[in-house]
Image (cartoon, rainbow over all chains, first blue to last red; front, side, top):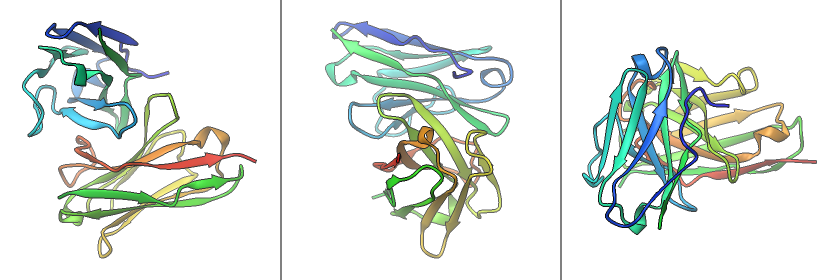
Length: 108
Length: 121
């Protein structure tokens, strides 16, 4: 049982915008950076967003992150078939790294 | 190219021990914190442990504290996870991950391919 809450699934058609929420508390999201990881089927996770809204080099600008209070969001605009994956939010909470339960994104 | 290569996984009986290794290349290993993250097949990610670049600071998940020990040999560019008193619930793919900074309290920007640990009699 994670201290972070994510919807188990999200879906959209190609080209649509999909948003994934991540809800926490004042001790984790409320006072620390949020990270987002993408895990394509059968592969290791990959860093998608760091420090709430920063993209590592190589990550398309279709992916964007935001944070407000004790919640964060990952938005995927211009959804593509290769975006079908599991997405995890994560945050440091009192020197413990916590991952959300993950959201499976399906491209219809 | 930055690479992380885990090894040491396998089948072990409950109560047994196993040591995982993660060989790093393509970056100055001692400059970066490292971590272990595990994933039960079909389930989500669970952070296990992290260590600072110099090895002087370590953090553990409550689920493994007192049983697992993270360490590193910067002369060999290798990260370790000593796992003792293993339980069935420790069965998972174990990933090593690099942080972009010396402190562990940061992103995991590079991940290895994972090594499978199965705890079963």
